[in-house]
Length: 369
Length: 245
Image 1 (cartoon, rainbow over the protein chains, first blue to last red):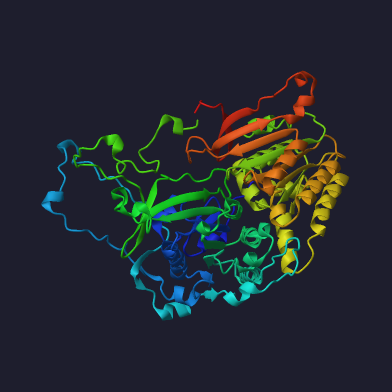
Image 2 (image 1 turned 180 degrees about the vertical axis):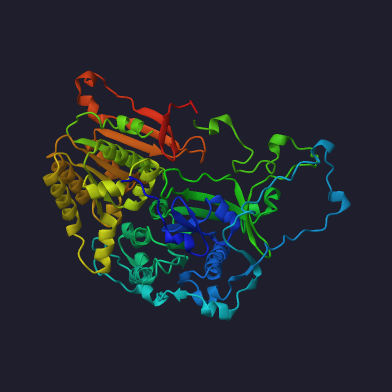
């Protein structure tokens, strides 16, 4: 009798998935994001996006995730308290057959760089990721999916509303029980949705701005400050347990910048499988830094977990930046532009030449092995 | 490749109730140690109870397939058993049942296994999640003590508590320290502070607080911990001395 049997997994037949390590992966809708997190979002996992301060770019990622689900005909569950989820789904980017073309400014003769002849034959350095991926669709942000398609798609909306934010599910602190009706209602919604899902199709759960002030209203009223965030932490844990080993992919955006206590986010992320953080330049001093002139913000990879395998994915680079073009959202390797102008300043006084990120600033003492 | 981990944990030695604590620091994932121990138990045909509250049994099974063992087959044979603590808690909350009974259920499971086997080893994966579920520090500490006490009725078992040390001023850190005080071996896994690397997965520090009462170390004032770098592969783990990458 054979000791090992090969898994014959029906999930190989699910549209819009790719099997890796005996686990189906789905696309986030953004090829470059899929590439840097290891090929996509694995089924049975929670993907957390720590929002930028204004929440603009995290919402774009959120819409991409839902749009990808609509394009793949996956089951969807969308909820948000800060915004009407119907409005979010009415603004989903439309899939397009080919990648939307980059806008290229016409180059003038003055801008053309002279290059030594021995380097002319070399290919250009590839800064972008995921250009040759075979998972996921391409989307055009300038056009929306029509209302009929949204109507016919398998989208279910969460029933939690902001009126639930002041309702208490449990009047006293009881072990394992969620105090806030908001979290309890959402968990029950998701539990019933997961139970109802066929298992032969992917279910995408999309929760927008979990942990925003509306979610935390009950904790804010609590006189015992150490209870702040307990429901959020517990909810994330239960969600992790609920979706594991199932054909369910969860995408959550969290305004982590609102939490002064770093312990809360660390515990929340402990229950998540993969997490990224968006740092937008809007309103910060980096907005005017010429080093970052080609980008809208930095993209940090906070956590990557190994699921069904021992080895977690190591991304090609941690120095990542993103830009929101007219038609697409792109994550690229951060490149510092060359400094070509001659200045009278000393190099060590030039603060714009060296960014505060680790890119290009390698020192031997930074390496700790 | 997992033998190096099990020899560091001194599993081959006949230590009476070998208490091991695995601490995850700085967001590092220490579940590879649990995988190595599972692999050891299957190869040695040593009974094991896995109480899982962080990773699922299916995850351990799939990792184990690459490490050349079949966890589900061992479960069918009765060598390995598991108690899905997370699933039981979730079922309780969805069915509006009380969750006070859960800790007692875990202890009963251990006793049930002890009726069929001389030695029952125990792994509690993600013990710090009990604090997230609003068990108090005192309750969790008492529960761990009871597990050790019941496990001690077996012949030379080992008990592994896998915990996540979030930050210094937090209950998780207190629990990790309380367990470390009870432990014979403390394993700390930590991410590289400089970021991710394809050459090294993280730091591994092993302390043997239980050895200080051994005759050979009785005159040693301060026992130095053993520090390694570790690299994860599909089929196991490799330990490296610092500087030898």
